[in-house]
Image 1 (cartoon, rainbow, N blue to C red):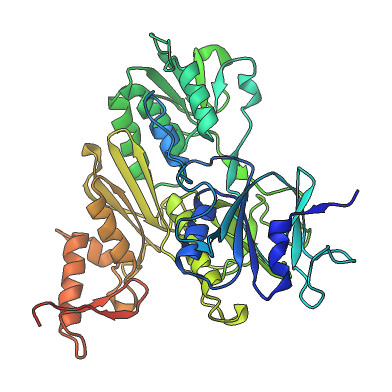
Image 2: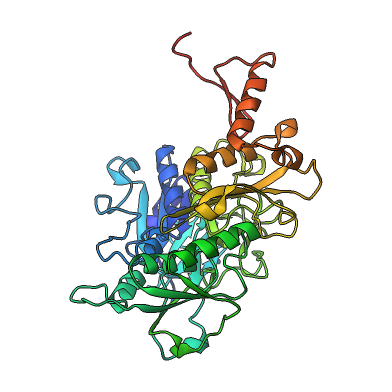
Length: 479
């Protein structure tokens, strides 16, 4: 039986307008659509495909798990049912939403060409959906994110909950006794996992009066962080009523009345991708610095958690900032079409991540502290034990090794200073020797560099150097 061609997706094939299709309407795909529409492309349409009818922001789900009045933050509010408010042309939506599950993607259309396709410009590929329809594309972006690992077999037969979408969060609240009609919530809670999500849920449970126990794979939580930060998090959460069971990744199922499972996730790639599209051993799509999928013949991109750069240091994957940043950058590029793909500017962004664990505010930026290189003698500023301090990470133990990452516990202002410090280049970079000096503070170091910069010829007081290295002249009202 021949596939039915979606008439909307194929309507542009009779002119030169590119038809862009984004699979995945989560944070990355939505950011791309909004940036694409805001850039105001004169031609073409963009179609968002997702199996969920109403995608929501994922990070708030775990943080508000024990708040029965919390409502999921919808990525597409009800007042925008068909497209973006600023993404219309002649009254028709330029950004279209389509609910469906992808079953296969063909990079090149088979012969004969699909009905309605212009013979001189056939579509680059086709997406097959579970309802039997086919959506053609000229440009394809995959932004399908991650899916949680299955509940471990050790917890079979007990109440074990995962949080990965709005429905699972509502089901978890009901099981915890926080839904309508429930009076006494569950108190004895086991949390299986060692990462950010496990700590967020455990601290939320403790704040709500429950007695959570986090069962760790190793001795300390969050293996991607430096040892000083991991120790501080364990002690701060312990003091707030969170218990930890070290080296216990397969606990007895009956140890707790209810389990919250946060044992990681795997790439949620659609089935039936071409074999030529290159992947990592973990299943992520490899992309270049333009976010194009390695091995794909046409314009095929991957953004967010499912993508991994084929060269250079890895940014903060699993981060909402990464998803939004890559989506916004690529959406603008695709809308502008200012340069041929072969000469397009490369994507570059300083990766950062945030995790709110009860009253604790944790931020990371740059290379993670759990790697062998950056783990070499980190420098601690402030008092992590009080919930306010920073861990500075360097590219080695040499005194001249540059700053490569910062972990911040406390106010966002200190994290913002860390981002500015890591954006410095050349001889302005902060070294291990400088940071080891008595009284060193990131804000003071940045202020000193700004003063030095103002004294250099050719730079005035109204000049601001952006993290990208470009020089931007700001208007001085007093001039």
